[in-house]
Figure 1 (tube, helix red, strand yellow):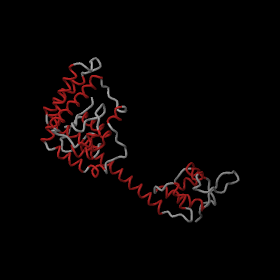
Figure 2: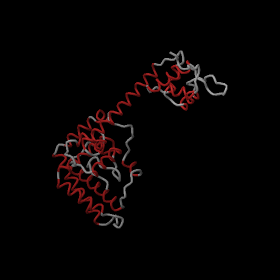
Figure 3: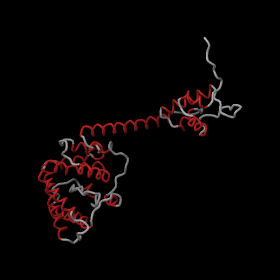
Figure 4: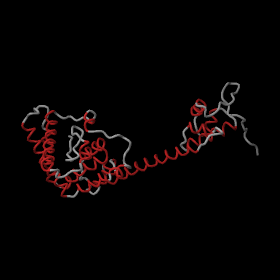
Length: 311
């Protein structure tokens, strides 16, 4: 039996092919000092020997395990303690695994619900999971999406109570649709001082009080209190690292095609609601912690009234 010709040194292309990488990657290893420069042949091209290949293979194994190139370089230093690097890697891998599991859960929830609801936080999806398929409209989900971005999962979970009531009370849903249509009609041709603005705002106030009463009757306000009581524990696992913002900050970042008359109508409705609460005490709603964070405007929603603000 005759062996094929066994080379004493190989070119970079053959070295890359054997190690399962690319010549470009090997050149990068050289550039950052991870792989020493090998001898060069008469043509001034790199030639790799046995020791070079062993080191290259270990580099590939460590890189495939997720070890950073900087940490790989230190492993070849005789006095290096690799324990810290491995500990950092283990923490990083655990975080990645948790992120992947959250992604898988979101995909499962989406498949089960048949809509993007599953992409919202578990606090929100858990709040409305009992509703039948199709009970929530896409506009409801859109509003929850915006609220979650502004106030975080807790704010959106509390706001979800409003949509639960609308989904289970056809009369309130019909009135909500009527008022939304009337408010939308307050276009740029309507003066903010037009009597219709005050009229629609008063109707919104009465409607939101009715929605609040339905929330209280269903006991949703009590379960919302539990959310607030455990907000630190409940939200610890659903934060995605994106900072929440106040409604005032959101005004300049989330566009809404609202006319001045419509904005004034929303402002006036909130003034009337706040006055009603100051006079009679909140008939419904969550503790003041979230309400104090919110200054309603385009892109925001009242945490105390859970009112939907948006097209």
